[in-house]
Image 1 (cartoon, rainbow, N blue to C red):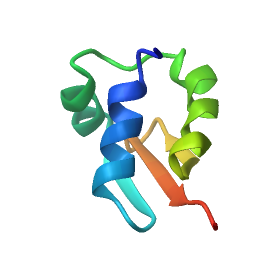
Image 2 (image 1 turned 135 degrees about the horizontal axis):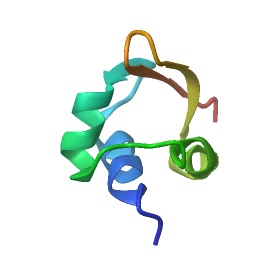
Image 3 (image 1 turned 180 degrees about the vertical axis):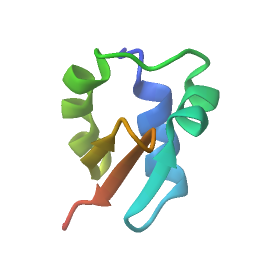
Length: 69
């Protein structure tokens, strides 16, 4: 099980469209601070119907896109 799986499951169960989350919101779901490993683990997200569109270090946000079926 990936350390980011709780976030992927939350996204799969709670979102139906493209959206943006703050680092703080993500960290609340995960229970830990996200770090550079997120860049590797984001490759798991398409299995849950979404992908990472953009990570903004300036805004401290991550934009997610729902994959086309």
